[in-house]
Length: 432
Image (cartoon, rainbow, N blue to C red; front, side, top):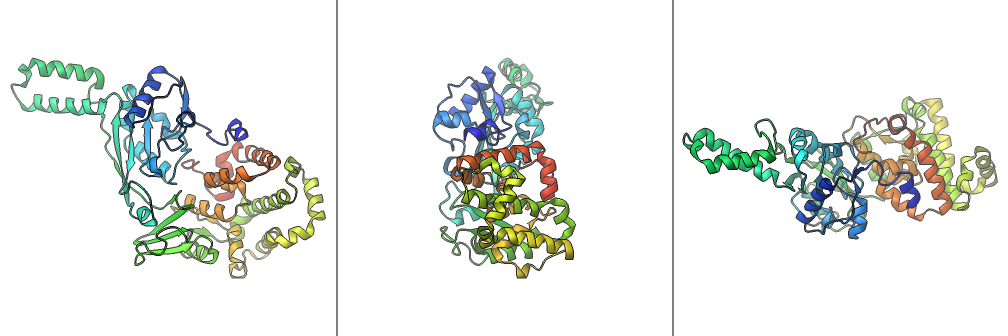
């Protein structure tokens, strides 16, 4: 993983915590979770406060994600809202954190001047043992504390202020007045500084969960659809009267679900030709074929002449696989007729021709599912399914890893927004 670390393809865009008072606040949060304090003088954190350096020190990547549910967070500064989430078991963790930051901006700004927030995202389960546990999560609540106890002291000061205003003799209580002065030194004027977060409960909508090999849960009004490994505990048994189950290797049903619910854009010349997505996937599939046949080719694949020569010399291998010729033919048909009959396409190949509908709220989740269905496209996998990308990267040959990193740094990382907008129609940074 060193090459990924050096190029910031893993744990990139994190915030350094180096000031002694901030390290001390982080340590108090760790102790609040029952964890041992860090001995590091500096470390980096993501939006949730997760630090890869502290994870290594503790020997536990899930130190803020026990049982991979009820995710913990440590908020040191409002700046964390603009950071990525680099380690999570739920695809919507970043979305929920964004909602929390947006709904409680004033409180977070005020509290983090003198304190840090820590707590967890609570839901209805404490451990996931079957699909029923995931299906039971309808909403989550943020249960938050502060390392210097500012929240509790602000609440105490509020009570004393209320008493002072309602009890005409309270101003004679010197002990109470002295206590108010003492508290105000820490909290400031709570009439101006809103220290208690306003909104703590949020909806838990469609999501992917890193359980049982990966579970996709989609919501359409009262209808719920689960897409995962058919061997997952509870498959077709948890709430069969209100949940539809689709095995993730049933490409026909997965595609039909996405198409019928309006979650994908079918291949039309209007977006296919301007986006270059099919050309991109065609190139990705060809490079995967080269790697399978010649693992030591590596960066030679970046040379168009070398690639053309390899293609001519290995025509039988390419034809036998079929995916590359199929995409080339599909692009010609779309260019000449404007579309293609999906009924004539093998179910497992249909995902190479589509992308998530930009207008749909589940666009990131759908693109994640599509990326999983087209594993050769490591660029899309990196953008939408980083867990899947990192797992695949571990299986790549050393030379292919070199090529993968070179490709990602030379394309996507140059201008993420422009790249996503052009290929997938997505320009927002919320999940990147």
